[in-house]
Image (cartoon, rainbow, N blue to C red; front, side, top):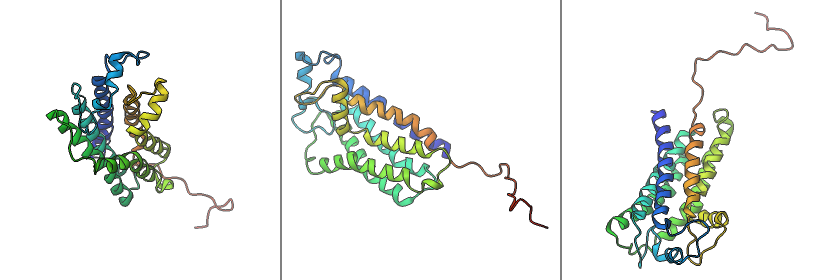
Length: 239
């Protein structure tokens, strides 16, 4: 069962990364080729009206970007909600706390998918979307780092650094980090939304899918070789 959960988490993160990149491609390709972001076709789709994450009105749908991004977020939510339970020794409080930002991400994903399916903008989201965004961008990194760091001395040998790496990669896979890291990566800052910054999150998610595997390695099985008794003061205790 544990092996299946490990495969599921890594597979969901990889799927999320691929779908997130595909969603970006539906918006930016072929209008925004690298080095040609100032061309009229690219400048047009940089308008916020083409944004597809929980899109408010007015909204101009582009291909299946919203559906793909919605499924990607749901996959991410399930993966991050499951991950702390695979980091022994488990801390139930921290693991359950991870479910809070995970549910916010899942709600954003389901709403985005529904909007893409209907082709209609989301109404009445002004109240909860900012809170969900805060939980995603700030809450998720905090609880994942806490889950990775809790009782490090009791973690299986060699997994601590992988846990911290997975927490950092997943914590940075969000729209806020996309804006700052992505703009620096492409060397361009848009008047509205910089092209291809979603590729940052996609890359981080694919990297997290790889890092998660060694981070979820469990403790060694019982029944291995037993260490020899230590000598005390150079002599074995008399029997």
